[in-house]
Length: 244
Image (cartoon, rainbow, N blue to C red):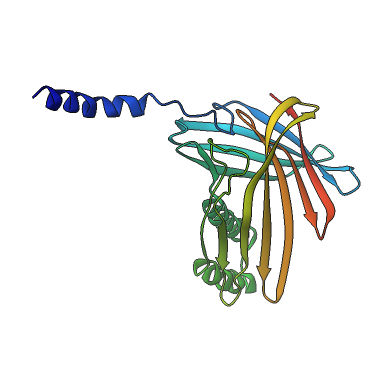
């Protein structure tokens, strides 16, 4: 009887023990209001575009929650791209919902075209475009950066495919692995980062492009630095320059 009571007590304690386990700090700001500013540079190190990522909405928690990031691109102080980027948190993993992002971009494109098209032949053009967009689909399985990242860890592959009539461009992210841990200093400060390498393959019609990305992530921040390589040549760098 005593052993039975001890066993039952242990089983009753399991949920509390599991709930008490602490989740490592994820690779994302801890709440709404944080703004991350980046410089996007070309192969020669010249700044071409400024990027601002503002955490506008944060709900739930890092175990099961979501956020909306307002991502804006500026050139010569002129805003020319602004997107609402949906982010999902799944047991500490920070996942950018690229499927929802691309679906919304298509819907916005259709609305913009409808607003610009007025009367005559353009109406027929709009009807044709609307039919095409209605049949357009986006599918895939997005994966992100887990909170329990360790050097040597292999991360899951993922892919995204858009289908438009007979045109089906597809992006694949493969060979994702954590290759190191480094201290990175930028104009925004000094950060303890994990290094993630992955291969991105873009397929469209008869064309296939393959690039390699090396990214540095810091806890409580997210992306600090990213390099894009093509055939062993550096083609661009994204660098965090401010955290507000």
